[in-house]
Image (cartoon, rainbow over the protein chains, first blue to last red):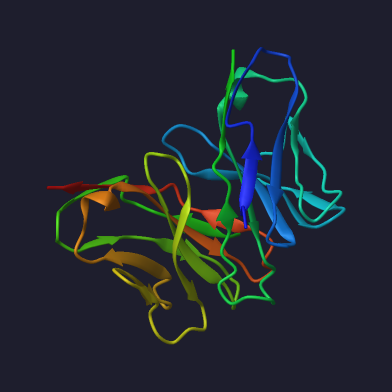
Length: 116
Length: 114
């Protein structure tokens, strides 16, 4: 199993550009998440999904969009990049709590995004 | 509303000593899960240990143990026999009863001194 994969690892964007951060998992998890982590800070939830076709906003959704057309993939879209979106982005996945006891999140390696 | 509080921004511990990282939580849910993650300087998030709210015994995983005090709403991580490789950020997290979201604390930076 590859676990949770994210691409790209690094990216520099100019203000106003758009891009999609890719996330895929091969563990058949139904729950997937996107977080951002600003320097020296904790994780803030951007969006999450409890299954294909179902997404919901987290704490900091403004400026982002997501879709979940398959169980495996959960891309994050930045439409008009702004310097405030400079951050490290983590994708994560988990089972629903009725299937496994611990239900911990499995994280991807992160994408380091800089907006100049 | 769910909230996780980690009040220790930074901690130092001598190699081979034990250290306790504090975590308190606020929830009105009857059923919830508590997690600890380690984030080394390389950036990845590593799951360490889990405690369910109905688990009667404190969780242990190797050198990690979770001191769970339900009435005080605390879930402190204890690392025994600290190693240099334990130097990292440590995050406490909670999953609520609806199971949809995880709530993270702001983290504690642990430095192990040789």
